[in-house]
Length: 458
Image (cartoon, rainbow, N blue to C red):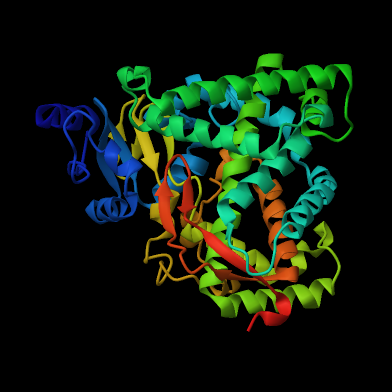
């Protein structure tokens, strides 16, 4: 392994000092266990080692880019030279398809042009009533003082909301079924991306069976939704909007592309929004003073009525709370790129086909850009930030590959959080022991809360 690493240095480094290797590689699997187990200390150690460090995920090396200005160069300045790819994404593509998240630049440009209209501001405003109805239904089922597993609630809420906006009404699955299938798929996908050895996924393990069943059933649901939309269109559903969308040349998405996009939206639209909402609720239960300030803002702006798209700009603290939540807990915490031509990055030259990683979690916990990075401080966003700090805050990515659903997800989270806090004051359950769980997403475990009427908030 040492000989292979030195050979890699000679192949990559044409000038300057050698790139340091990330600490703590294991035999055979390299640094992959850190991605699946407890990444924060390892990511901090990598940042201390240098702006670029070499890591091993299986037999081939990759390079973790730790400096925000270099990540910005990959995502924005030299975007044509850095395509979606790398070991994590390459291992995921056979299972999730060639959707907007996994597609290479050429396919992505076409797909994005076609899909953009489905996520326009007026379309998202049209979905707001669904967000509100489902949020109302969720909190109406709560009882004062009764313990709630909030992540389960958030998954069901977001899955049902997404299903209602994405799929024709006749093809809506049960929200609990959809949330369970997405969770099984996400768990299996982590194993197949971080530990890509084929023999692992061939083992007759319950997790492998659940993954294959979830993949098959989600794809079948997507195909049924497409067929239903063709025979009985439902005005306003995302599937109908995607099927009707055309690029400037008049091209539409093929049926297989539609399946891939639906799977992408189910995975990318459920877990991130549910986890963001869950982390925000956790933080507010730990900081009751900020929760009370948030409720005061909602009382002032909304005056007892339901939140609407026209209120988003006025809910400044709400926006800051969600922004700070995403800084502390970026749901998509690790991303990848591969260069399509020889490039110079950080003073080093890399041949085409080199794999690169970068971590939003690492960048957003860097004290050089975010003083007291572990502190929950929504007010930090009231102060203008420097260009380098903006480059370090990438919860939705950056540049032309920035998440197409960022506004959709933030609108949904804003409406859900506002609906909850106008009726309830939230406290942590006595036995709640929240921990960070790093999979393909960053989610909380054991997030149990108790809702209490607003008049008992003190």
